[in-house]
Length: 494
Image (cartoon, rainbow, N blue to C red; front, side, top):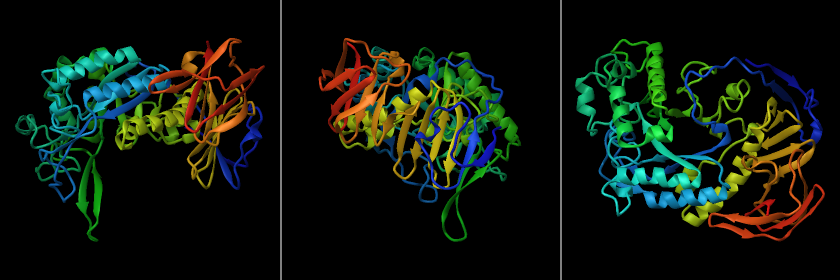
């Protein structure tokens, strides 16, 4: 699909100032080559021009009933990380920090006792996260889906179509209907997370359509136009203890050997599920590229993969055709995982500080890069790499420091944790400056295509809104400013 040639880090045809970034030692160059591509569905959003994240509401706890690690049922306990009201406050703060970029937020743990609870059913809300004034959690979720629109945010759900737990309201129905995956001996397929649904059997008996229909009747998913399917595996992840007593996971395909369906029929059934959502006006995004894709890189079923680590896709498809949140080819851009940021922060304020930093150092850069065609990826033996784009844009990602640098026509726009880039969704008459460690009287040059109006004003950006910022000077295409550690500033039309 693309050519890989070992070269020294030098000129690639059409690139301005190629030596602005360099790598040491032996390198190889992978050239971008667009492959034929056709959508099998009709995406409602261009996810390459949005911020996509999850918010983790609640975890359903379990005891590790299978091999001491794996979940078969809830144990009745739950850990609440966010209520619906708290999620709403995060959505408001994220919108202020992200300067109104269109966003999609998928809710994790919204159902029953929380994340990974009661599948294959997903018909009741989690009462532990509801608003006090609402009768049930589904009412609270409907409220949030509507209220978030004011903050440029589409709220939808994180669901699972593969797992089946034995305390689910649907478990006996699915067992009697013989749509649960079975091993060769006919026993139910134990996996890392519960048992597994046999995709073709569920589809042929109309049960997949039935549960999708019911979910869409309970919540306005069609209005949201998007849903996220977690763990949409093509193989069954089955744990075992090896001869050395170590816990391992093997992958079984076809998913249900006893039923006699082929791996191709498993894939076809998954495609039918995606197309059924599509027929209702709903995009399906999924967890990752590996073991969750339908077909090869030209598949055209998923407009966004949450964990997008495919080098082959990154060098064969453009950003509108394949993209994600956690991107493996870092030189082509990456995005902050808001779910983990807020879940692990310890406090709301600390979460917003980390979110702001990640948004500026990742999403802001990624949005800028997505406006330029990719030309090549140059990498060395230490996993450092350079991204080569059209119009003189280059990036350098240093793996050990987890640091991204950006330049256009040899002009540095991001380096050493500092960023100076336009928020492209606001147009070409703005600049966002951010510094992780702060600096005094640092002068930047505006990149080509970006202008600042003569009466430009400036504001410090936080989750609470904007406050006036005056410590900057504009002279021609030069901007000099002083930033405190962690400060984000927007310079734009006053």
